[in-house]
Structure formats: structure tokens, C-alpha cells
Amino acid sequence: MEIYQHFRKEEHHFIDQVLEWQETVKRQYAPKLTDFLDPREQQIVQSVIGRDEEVRIAFFGGAPFVERKRALLFPPYFQPTDEDYEIALFEVHYPSKFISLEHRQVLGALMSLGLRRGKFGDILMKEERVQFLAANEVADYIRLHLHAIGKANVSVEKRPLTEIITLEEKWQDTTITASSLRLDAILSQAFHVSRQKIQSFIENGFVKVNWKIVEQAHFECQQGDILSARGFGRCKIISIEGKTKKEKWRIRIGIQK
Image (cartoon, rainbow, N blue to C red; front, side, top):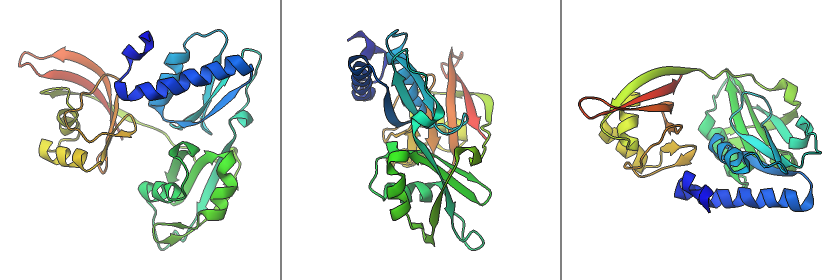
């Protein structure tokens, strides 16, 4: 099918799933709610559904600023509300005077519950407050089974979405030059670290492209990709602007502050 040529091979399975959702909405003439999707998956859903007059699409993840959102595919007659996305907000209570929690610890604790990543939205941390979003259908299970994060004993409390922690995302725009569009070459220049160190990070599973772990240093990046390396942060490839006189790639990137 022509649509596959616009995407990487590893994304084809997800495209098949989106096409299945689309057909389900048409066949049943009823809304279809997905799990939480990362921004790249949201882009794919948007591209695949396109301008289909029989299927509309909208996204919501608990607040306008969050990254991970549930998609709602629905026929034209349907008018979605925030409640239709069935999202639960949890506040984590822990002994903040004696211990601090990190994002990876919270995610690790959630994943240890045996649920898919798609059942969880964003993890929000501001000063000593920790919140996370989850699918309503697993809310009771989370309350019953989440008692520890790292070495801290915790309890979780369901809160209304109006009490969500507000976070602002800031990106610093800059231009780099890299010898190639390889993942290790771009990250080395973006974060000002040696290529050898970045290669080690990649091989150890500490690097993600579009929210998926990539363990090949030679992975070729594209415009629009979001790259992250544990401990260094994230950057996005805004545009690939061609080559310099010295045959290096000039790349405009945004670095998250």
C-alpha cells in the first residue's frame, strides 16, 4: 500500500493497527478510544486517517501541554468531551522531606505493575510534587498495587484533572554541523560530548528516537525526529538544511531546557 512508503519500516505494524481502528469506526459507526500514544504515534494516526470524511480524530492527554495523549476516532455525528477520553490523574504521596523521586523511578514502578506503557500518560514533577496520568480502566488496579517507588513507600490519590501540575516546555533553537545524519554524530554535536561516549550510551539502551529505544549508532535520523539521551536531555531536528562547503550537514535543532 502506498501509505507505507512515507514511514520507517518499524512503524508499519502500528500503521496496520491504525487502519484497523479506522475500519472499526466505519463498521460499527461508534467511537474508538486508544491507549496513550506518544507524539510520533499521534503524528502517524493523523497522517493515516488524513481527511477521511467518515472518521474524525481528536487527541487529549489530561491537559493541553502533555505529550502522551489518547486518540479518539469517531464518526461525524459524535461530539467528544474530555470525559470521553477516560483519563485518571494520580497524585503520589511520599516522605518528600527525606527522599526525592526521579522520573525514571516513577516510570519503573508503574511498569513493574505489569501494565502496558500505553495505559500511562505523562509523569509530571514540579518541586516536591509528583503526579501521573493513567487510563481510567486501570485506575483501581493502580490504587491497589502501587505501594513503593524506588526505596520510598508511597500512596496514590486520584485527583480531578483541574488539579494537574502545569509545566512549560522550552526549546532553545540552535544550528549544528555533523559529519553525517547518524544518530551518534548528531547527538555528539547537540550535547557537546564525544562520539565514543554517545555510542556507549546508544549500545546500552540509554538513547531514544521518537520515544523508542534505538541501539544502533548508525541509525539515520530524519527531520522531525525527537532524540533523547539519559542524563543529557532531549533535542528535536527542526530542519536539515543541506551541506556546508566542507561536506558536513547543517542541521537546525531545538534543545529542551
